[in-house]
Image (cartoon, rainbow, N blue to C red; front, top):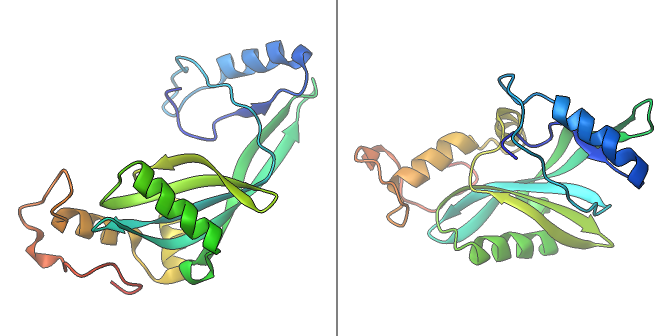
Length: 188
């Protein structure tokens, strides 16, 4: 509950595996070497996993990239399945399917997110995207670098610059005059 995403995700396929998985989770260390205060149990939605990275400016969401997640699975001696994200395959926003763009707009509208960076995780089952979670943040540094590689956009720099000047943001930097106020574009 108080850790980073992707730290020891286990799939319990039958009730007899539950005890072994709970013991594994209790032994898992958080970043920094601490134990966890608890863990979350979710139902599995089996499908292709994706994420969208972008920025909301003046209430309009702009996708920079869409990533399909590469998921690896391992089976332990007790037959329990552990899975994790081993990579992301990114495409620029011009290849964004309309259903993904609608999900992005719906998420930003639903959470009334008006300004700043976002990362939306979703799973596609039978061609339909299903919302998993949304972070009002930059993703990990690997994705920040991947976005720059794919789009030439310096996502962190653009996000901080836009947030510093956006009058709708909760925080406004007093030295923001260096930042442009134009809406986000591919090269800004």
